[in-house]
Length: 66
Image (tube, rainbow, N blue to C red; front, side):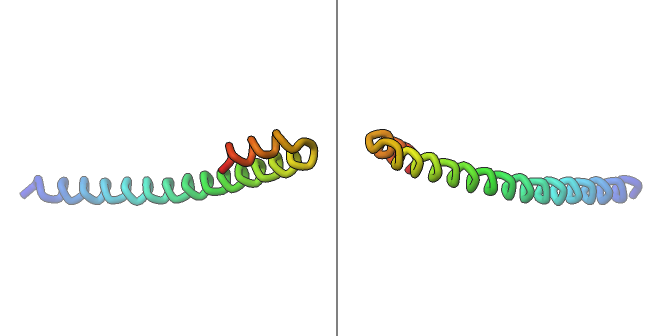
């Protein structure tokens, strides 16, 4: 009988850890999404600038960023 409460406590701790990990993953994915959006915007800006200044570089950069 003494082993039952310890098992329930352990399972609760496991659930807590899982919840913490899931919350952390959400924040990490949100940060990663923001970073990718920024990278995409930066790629678009560089491609447009390259397009303005020189045509051959613009075509290659547009191909690499797709």
